[in-house]
Length: 422
Image (cartoon, rainbow, N blue to C red; front, side, top):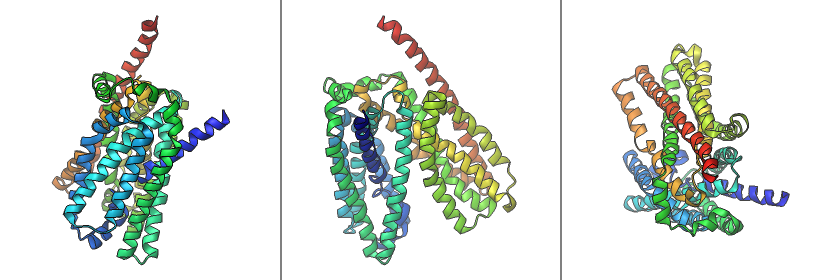
């Protein structure tokens, strides 16, 4: 048993490594925004178009990825996505022109969001039993945060060591690419046992990809799980605006702005995922129940943020309050896929189910920032931020309602299953 457990967690670590690196090339702007402008010859608008193209292709291809993950072995689609992203990165390191970059960023969406992500979620679900889903997905999110941070800072360090010029930027891109390829190859060999023995993989051949997609679409519980993810994600998108809010309202110094951003985007991700998984599995016994309670907790936390006096004397209090709010959201992000098991979504169609859920759940990424940004432009100053935070609070209230319905439907389904079996 100990040997089996060790292999299970070894596979988990490799999957987490993939999850923490496969998006690095598509998100070069996180650490290399200025080098992208200087050495790829891009304007701000062109970088925005590249990101939009990547997001649009990603959203459109989630369902296709779910179809493929039910039709083919997880190790094949995951490995193909990782190696494909790495090869694209190698070409990207030659600094191609803008038209070529448009194609490359669309291709990165094919590799990461179509081939990789739905298959990763399915593989993580199959690694854990029904009592471990919260922890598995929580540790996935936390582990991705660790890998994300280590790889990003390593690439940034390489860039600096190489002179912070075009050579350093090329070296950083190649580093991301090589890591993707190596992790992809490792995943192919390490997950071979899982593909051979996992019940989900044995059953997947019994249902064609298209039939699995049709079954998934007809499941009301899947749409509730997807909407639950949607509500968490639309609130999560609003966390971005805590950084300019603290700078504008409390006069946060430039150095503290950078430190706050790292903690808010990386540190809380590392802590929030495992914490959410632990609370879901050990304290609440249900990811759905935990997410509902967390939505409730966001309301008074946001009230504190809105009621704090807007002057530098309350800077530390503002930082603590916003970080507390963000931590709760990150614990929810860590487990918002765990209800798949709890809701009784059949394992043999989990790839298609994750594809549909990703399409719906991550949809706020296409419009939430535009809405929040429009509010800030329409209402300059602290008023705009208060409107944004008020909208986030309204979304949390709707999230409570969605989680309530999902919990009730899930309880009804569990109660009906034994009777049906009898």
